[in-house]
Length: 277
Image (cartoon, rainbow, N blue to C red; front, top):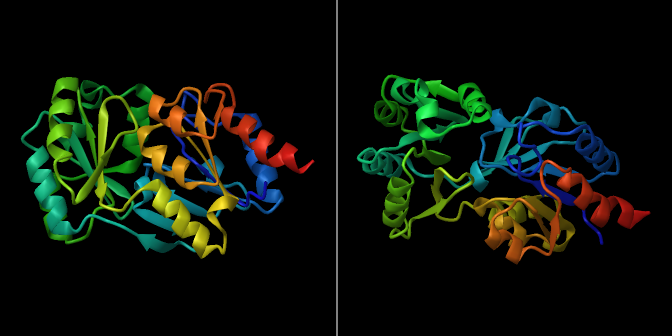
């Protein structure tokens, strides 16, 4: 094994059920960085949603965010690569989903854009207390989402959707998946995520590897959700968490323990750290 870059999903993977990173996992990531490996958060979150204790690890420099829409050099505060939804397409999609019973927020410049009618009723859309806390930290509240997007004239990294009614979720997903100009994935049972066609974690992982002069075979990816499938398939070693989706378990090279059992640390020990000793 010659793994030089490890891409890590956050929710359900690197973070436990309390949205925390364990001491063992933190030590493992620190050891990897000390050995010169790239540890890359690869998440549906924006960069502002990456926990500070991860960013503070010396050597954690790059991040793949919003499902591969953005590759960022966090040290230099520089965007390396993007694959976003153009403003007009974002507006068209938002107008379409607005006719459904759904909480929606586009991500623009690394922040989720929301309204009071959503922000003040998070529990009604099935968000856990931990997820509500994350949303409150990573969203900016505006009087009208559509007006904000129209006035900003900026592209969206992705559009996130939360549902209180799973039948409504299935209905909207079926309609969105008729289109060939977007990608629809999910990271939680009650959400959907809309990205530009071509914006996947797997594609972003390969672009970042190329930027760093690495081959695909020198990468390892660990995840649990539907939106992690592309990077599990693209990486030299694709690892699924035991708590992951069935399709991910079937596609993975290896299945590690759950996110509440230090599954990330266990996989890295097996394929990287102990493999070197």
